[in-house]
Length: 103
Image (cartoon, rainbow, N blue to C red; front, top):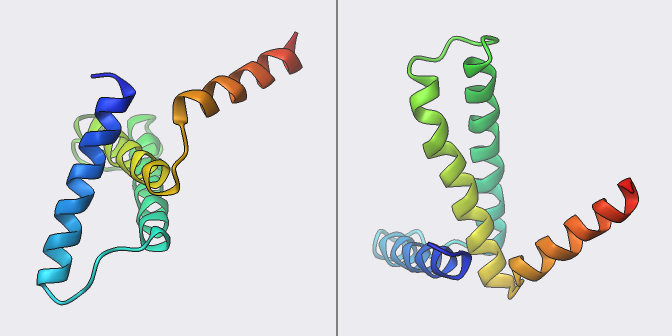
């Protein structure tokens, strides 16, 4: 899957979450809610990385690592979609800037 397909799939799932949450009386998530969810996922990822590296005890940490990375990616893709950010272009600019700085 290329990035545009990943972003479209992420937006599709986000819309499903919005429908589910609205039907449950909670309302759709705002971009702020998405960002806070992302922060929680990053925290979960950090704990799993620590466990995989032998610094914490979490059962099946290695098996759960990919899922948590995908959760974080989903949040980034949805936030980029909601804010109209072209991640391919921004990634290129960011990595080009780093390369210029390091050479």
